[in-house]
Image 1 (tube, rainbow, N blue to C red):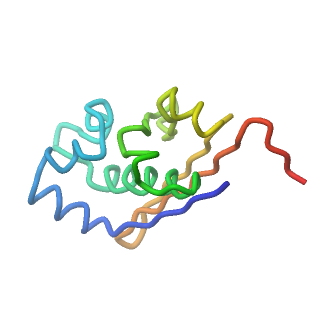
Image 2 (tube, rainbow, N blue to C red):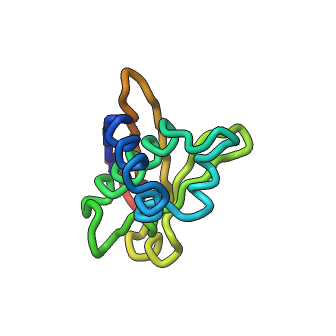
Length: 126
């Protein structure tokens, strides 16, 4: 199952400017906020990419952001090569019967775009 999302980086920047960390805490954990912060402050493109990634994951699962899957049920991190990856909390991985999740994020032309592919356990690809 595949999900894709695109967001204007300026939209995320406006919300951060207006609401600050209150906005960030609605969709990012403290660890995710730290990943998207450097000595100069928030890395807006990274934050926009994280937004798009979570939206794309919820679309791949066919539920959107809802009671079944909230922003904080998804966890973004980076591997040792600084590439982002996404997982769900253990109960959600089980609920959706997920084997693995793949993520790609890019930024260009003022937009952040993410694509997520979810592989389910015992899923056949005929």
